[in-house]
Length: 369
Ligand code: PHB
Image 1 (tube, rainbow, N blue to C red):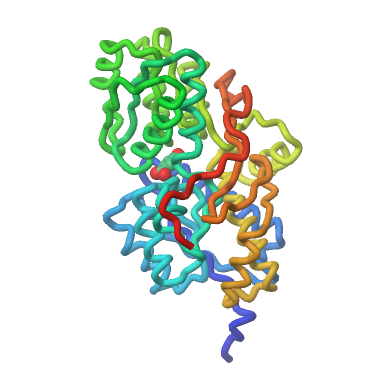
Image 2: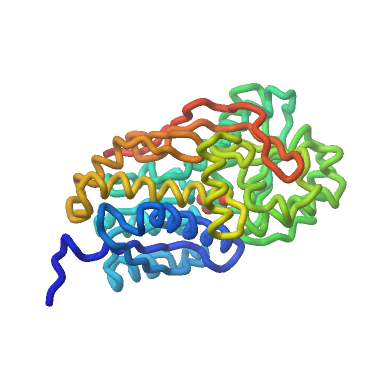
């Protein structure tokens, strides 16, 4: 018996890191995505859901091959991926060229909703420009004019430093030294020694996952947290606070989410996630949950007929996502238009100090759609 195409399950493919420094991020995204689908009785637009997955290990060299496993071997209807900016650029090109619906639940590569933008590519996370641009002005206005930056040398780190620099300079500050360490190295010592000798007004970094835990501990152990205030994009203190302990205390970050939001919507999400997975939710889980919410909006509009890609896309473009982070809409280039919070670590929580940028929209440089 052949299965009617309109009745067969929707095939969802996860291309995410399940090993390496970003493994916890990939797992959190997957868990929360499935939780949102389970809240719909396990259905998407009335249809059953079948999951496929590939561990991309945050390795750009294998990205095309991994993406093609889902597209060609598994013939999935939609890909949820990925975390690493370099991998996401290759994945986006495969999705664009094969017309496969793609929802990016983390990777911030500006190009994904910039020069590589396409009708079938959406992002429920952020662009690398967004949280970092929001921070440059904050640092300068707090009186820190001479700043050293340190990050992994790959697209995410480079683009976050660029976004930060843009608004730091516009507010009268300057980067006196840009330091880069290969991804995913955690040999921070020589860089910390250099920062101590430069004695800048502040340090701005991007690290995430396992590497973020080690960086914050090393920064404190070097005695720098007492003499040079640490600023970062909020990933530094997402899913890491338990392991970082007191070393993270007082760190200021900017991000489109905070575990200290304390809204009814976020509290309900956090309780449900903790109950289901016995783990603390974080920004990655929120982004994974919202990837599912976006897909649900798309498939409900066409009653599960994912072959109606135009209908799915139109619904995804116009929906307002009731996110734990606060509700958001999609920009023309399919990136969230969202508030960026200024947060401070206090007692193992990211407390909201204020809103650094209201309804911030990525400039989508180079996107023609
Ligand atoms: C990225 O590579 O785009 C990336 C990875 C981890 C994060 C944020 C951005 O926490």
